[in-house]
Length: 243
Image (cartoon, rainbow, N blue to C red; front, side, top):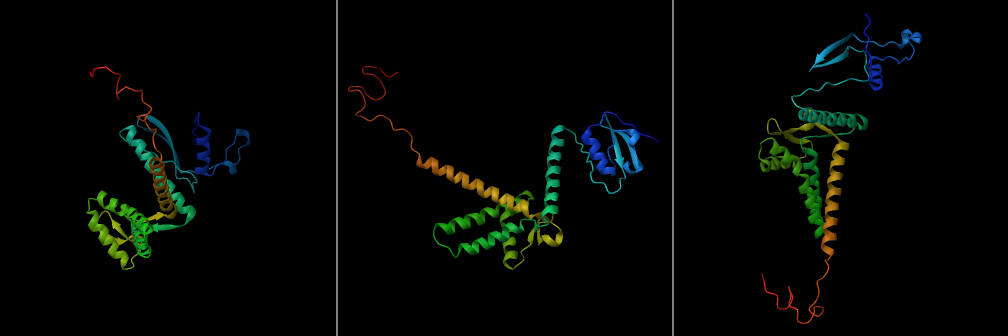
């Protein structure tokens, strides 16, 4: 009834201890009942030519392993990146405990409020605020395009719902309908949304500053007619035939 495994990395041992609520012991003579963990089943399986040890049925595990499989290494890399992103999003939601509705509803609502605010301004400030509002609406437009829907029609429908006070109305990409994202359980962490907006705004400001530098910097001027050698025509020496 004893399953022995050798050449296990220390990091894997620590994860196993967290999963089974066990304690790492360096001396077998000092093991006590309190050091032991609990698991329903420990078995070895062959997955894709590799032998792996599975520990399942742990009580209140504080660590778990996720096995990813795919046809090619490229597919596995994409799955791993997507899974890491999803885990980070869930972690942020648990830490902050602040969520917003998904489906493009926050962008449409903020864009609508910015358009209203822009009407109170004049001059270039009004153009800047309107431009920011239009940039936010790219998110629901992209959602509609990726779902094979008409982006203009869907954006107009979203605007109509938000003008009626439906602040959490968003696009259901599966049915092509505008529904209440909050009631449908489609939510996003607030931190992820704010970081995306801040990063986009900072990138736009950086590009505008670079354009200003390029526009204000002039290249070195060429020699004037007075600085040229007398009798030398532009582009060559006197008497030189053009090839």
